[in-house]
Amino acid sequence: MRIGTFEPVNNLSDEYGQIAQHDERVAEALIASGEFRHAAYFLIQAIEKYLRSRIFAIVDGRNTYFRDQYRNHSVEEAADFLVQVISGNVEVQKQIRSQLDRFVFQGVRFNHLHNNLRYPLFSERFQGFVLLNVNAEDIESLRSRLRWV
Image (tube, rainbow, N blue to C red; front, side, top):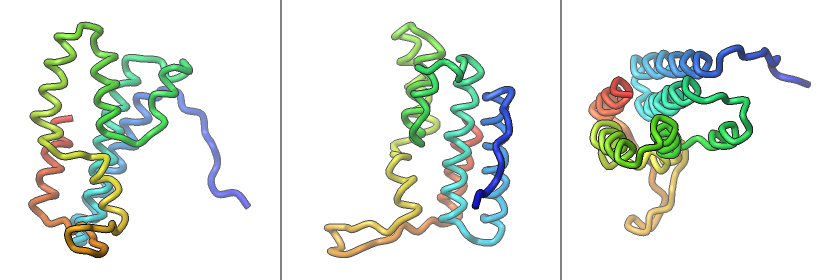
């Protein structure tokens, strides 16, 4: 049994942008139904895909090197790679990374958040498993970061 069919992608940057928009719409539907934790997950997915859309507006995804750079689902790694492809100048890279840290990351480790939204985790502090709860204020924080990207 097979699920789905593959279709050719003509413009990788545009495709990532469209998928990001779909993730945003799904997040908004989940927010409307009060499913904040799941909505947060899709907002993070949209952030990642918008970053990748910008990367592939600059580089050719058919190139093996660039293709290998996007095999994971890390917002942080996508942002780092975007900074690298925007400029080879180390000072420019520092400035861009500083802006990303200030306006997007704001001390949040998205790679941890990505998993903590989906799975219970063991906490030494609580001596048991915990589940991350997300509220409307958290959602607004993620929305503002998404708008910045």
